[in-house]
Amino acid sequence: MTVQAADGRLHYLAGDNLPDSISLYSGVTYRGAHLAEVLLNPKQAPAVPLLPPPTGLISQRDAFFLVLGFFGFSLISFLAEQVAYALT
Image 1 (cartoon, one colour):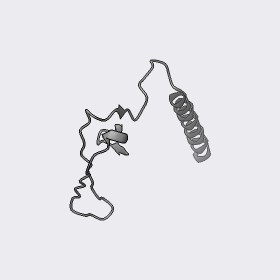
Image 2 (cartoon, helix red, strand yellow; image 1 turned 180 degrees about the horizontal axis):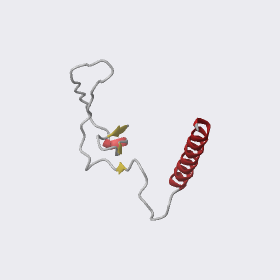
Image 3 (tube, one colour; image 1 turned 135 degrees about the horizontal axis):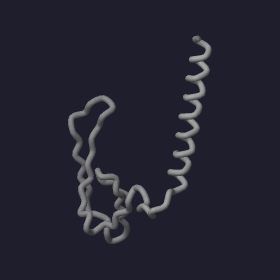
């Protein structure tokens, strides 16, 4: 069983760690915004961070977004310059 906490951590429960019962509490139902909570004792369940811990170096994901952002900025700057020339 996998439970995600409100702070994004994942708790994996298996074997003897499985709870005897699960209680779900839901709030007032609003269209498209339902609420549910699973309460457990996080001291008994190992937590896995949603994102890997930083290693001090730039990750491939960060490098990709850096290159993508630079490309997007360059493209917008180029198009804005072309529009400025066209309007003059």
